[in-house]
Image (cartoon, rainbow, N blue to C red):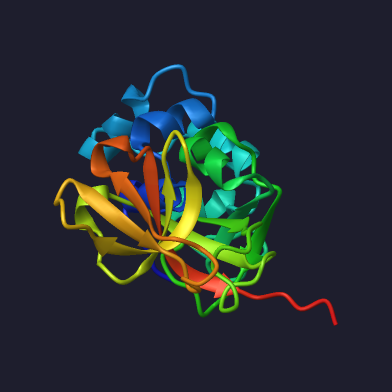
Length: 208
């Protein structure tokens, strides 16, 4: 078996999975400074056992041996399926997801590049997206949206999932529900957006 990735490539994969910046990730795992991670990025040093322990303490699904050596599976249970952290929280809370602790981890092979999962507790996007649907999200920039796609948009006033369109004013976005007879369009200024998440996948749960 050959070594899979460089130390930074492995570390960057976990940072991407967390949905955090490098600085926020360092704080999240309990490091007082992020300099050690940037030393790894620059190639000046490798992943130490202390850093590996901090990461595994916060993300127990990660295989410490893989993190240190690159051999084997990224995940402690041997699976190669991407694990997405699930947060039992309101949509508004995911703007500061680094301060939250995942409730569990989800394995969905068909969903790629999702950073977090959260339950959608609203009827705004019915009937296509019923209340209770699990959303798989990836953080995006408000300047790189694909108009017509679904996003979770968080502002000081709203935390909603909507289909995003360009407004007549280029500084604003128009947010559309699936059923315009039940829910009016919303208009939000780009400058007021605290966070925006691309909907990478949806898992609809049925109780019957």
